[in-house]
Every structure is written in C-alpha cells, then in structure tokens.
Image (cartoon, rainbow, N blue to C red; front, side):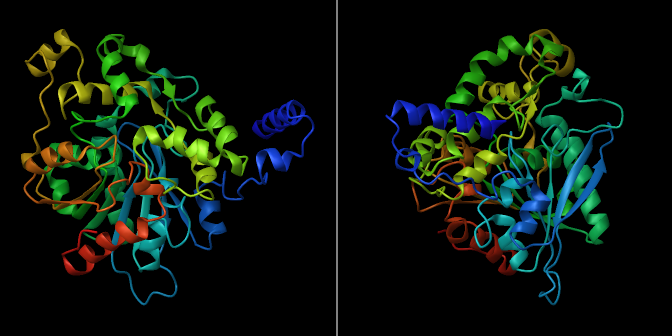
Length: 405
C-alpha cells in the first residue's frame, strides 16, 4: 500500500511539473533492498548467520531475542556481548548501517557471541501468554520500569544459561542504558552478571535535553499521568502512520535525502549526513518500532523529576512512596563498571546530564567524542561508528582501557 501511495504522489508531481521525466524530478527511484527486512532476513542478506530465541517474563510477556553466534572463522569465543536498543526502537538498530559499520556486525567480526533482546511492546515482542496486544489494553500497562526489572533480567538470565557463561558485556543506546541502571539499583545481584556496560548516549537525567519531543512530554506528563488506564495504548508502532509516512517521504527517492536528513535528524542533533544516503532508507524502514503511551509519558516525568521512580500524582505518590514527589533511583548499589560515550551535539543526552549520572556511580568513565557534531542517532546509525565507538568497546574488553577519540 505504501508503495502505491508513493507511486500516486510521484504521478501527481510528474503532472504538476509539466510532464518532465520522473528521474529528473526525483532522482534515481530505487528502494533499498535492505529497507524492510526483519532482523533474521537482514542479517542473512548481509552475509551473517542469525538465530531467534524467545523468553517469557514473570508477568507473561514473550520477548524475542536475536543472536549472531560465533563465526566459523573464529577459533574461540571472546565472550558474550548483549546489545540493547533504545526507546521506540528495536534490535534492528545494531544491524542497520550494514557490514563493517553496524555495532553487532563489528562485534561478531571480532569473535564475540552477540545477543540482541527486544523489550515488551516493540515490533518483535508484541506477544503475551494471556493478553492480546490488539484487544487487551492491559498489555500496554508498562513503562521503562517494567522493562528494566522484568524484561532485562529475563533476557540476561536466558543468555547466560544458553551460553554457560557467568558474565556478559552490555552495549546499550539511550533507554537501554537506563534499564540496566534501574535493574542493578533494584536488584544488586545483577551487578555480578555484567562484566562492563557501555552507554551510548545514555539517558538518565534529562535536565538539559534540547530534544523538542522530550520537552513536549514534560509539559503533558502531569495531566496525562492522572488519566491512569487511559495511558494503556500502543504508540509509534512499526507499520503505523509515523513510520509509514517517514518511509514514504525518506525511503523512496534519493532527492529527498538532504531534506529528510535535516527534518528527521536535526531535532536530535546530527552530524551533517553522518547517516548516509544508503542507510537513511533502511532507518525509516525499521523505525519507530513501538512502545506504550505510558512509557512515552514516562520520559516527560523524568525530565520533570530527575532520574526517579514512576510519578503517580501527589495522592498516590504519598501512598506509595510517603512523599508528594517520587524519589530518585538510589544508584549507590550500582557497582558494575560503566563506560559512557557522549557528544556535545546530542540533543537528547546532554553531556552535563551524563556527568551528573557519572557522579552517582562508583565505577564509571566518560568519553566525549572529539566530533562535536555527532548526534543522538549517529551512535547507532552513523558512518563513523567503527571510527569512534566500536574501537572503544573492543579495546576495553581486550585490555581494560581505551583511548577516547
């Protein structure tokens, strides 16, 4: 259907332009063969072997985990790496830039056993033992809190059991960082299961965030929070209006690339065309990937209150926490080591906020990238991932140290 709409739009423009050749108006009309491929097919197309696994959480959500097993060319495994995607996104993020550039491909090429979970409610984890996501609003009654204390430990325990390892290394983008922070604060025993965490554009405190969506969330969060069950809705699903519109606008013609790069990514902070013209159509073919309205509003709460527990409103907060405002997460129990990577041009995870997070942790370091134009999405889709990011991860895993680039 979306390609039919695209064709209609092209025909209208063709007519409006006086019958000029379509290619002269829109450039070379070619859809990327990688644009809509799901994880397994995308990995296969790119020349990698991938597996799909499933794990059920204590409250019945059935999560999809993908794996890039040790390559046959590797003599032995260097260990387990788990890659956790960010808010509204999916495990596809670590494949999208393609071989030689994408996080998971680089780690697989270096003989790591790579696992990629998907949180409840996204494109790959819309399943439950009793609830139907299309009929039961209760399915969507979750936020990052449940993803942190229920989804993440289920995934970690499953991976460690399958691989017969006692620890794994954790690479995460944005909300994926927050999840492990919350888990290790709430369930300190998980500190021992993580060798090290690498936080790509980590989100915890958002006091200085310049991202317009977070600012909007902070405005509407207090009112919407009081609506309670009305927050139990799916938003930003893959195949929904936002994703289909973005794919139609940015995934069908090369001429749209400069415009889409500015429109879609400038609000997040972006390095001019760091996300290349061959990768952009693949990005919009896979994002967003869905979450709950409750989780959408949750990040407005965090900008308002700091990195804190769920805000139920004054009355229920008093009943739940004994205070009118929700307390901050107690990060004193987070003892595992962290390496954070940030950028001065990240409109979501401001370096000042990352430094505040760093000050709350026992073992952490921060690398602020020398490229001062690197944006929030460049950490997962940018062409310079193998120049700035994966060398830090690989160096630390192999030597216990790294050089900030």
